[in-house]
Image (cartoon, rainbow, N blue to C red; front, side, top):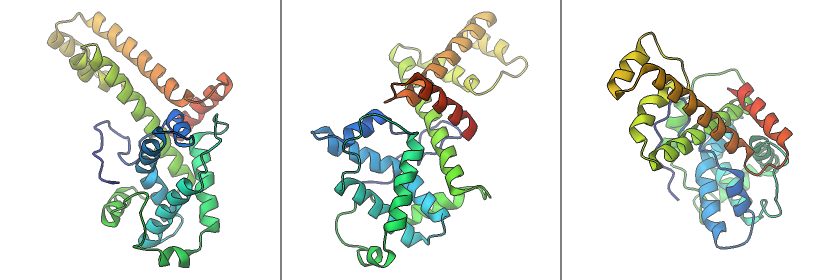
Length: 246
């Protein structure tokens, strides 16, 4: 399993923390032909945030790599996901709980003895992982808080990708490319005027189009956090937590 997936182009979203929707996690916890593909995607999506969390807990690179690989191996072999039908906790909380349980029980000496042997559930290029980890800004925040922020940015990124896909499918790729920067900021003075002229639109038409695109983006974010939830109150809680994590 390769760990060198290409990062996407959206600003401020970590290329190592791609949101895995709960629908995919539920597939990974069930039996059937989709399980292997779902588990592969799950491991590929989450190896780096788990690795970075373990490193921030004070582990050395090689130990962090081994503990990360052991975590995903146990996640698969012990079938921790089986029986999970609906989300009863935030995804980031659920994942961190499993990681912390793993760290409390893992014997470092036994992990080191397994180093280099067997089939690795996720391939971790240590030099690459440390490059990514070294690029992260210094912070006095807890590893848990940093992990939560990665998750929140990943949700926004996943929603943006879904919105991009929807626009491209209906032939609005160019319009999306020009207007997407305004999803996260207000226009500078004269910016709408210049862009409207470039796109051969009236300025007020451009402003209305941006407003609609922002609403679609908000809807996409809501859909992302609502996946697997049946209680509307939990959706609102997720959205509040997402905003607080940024």
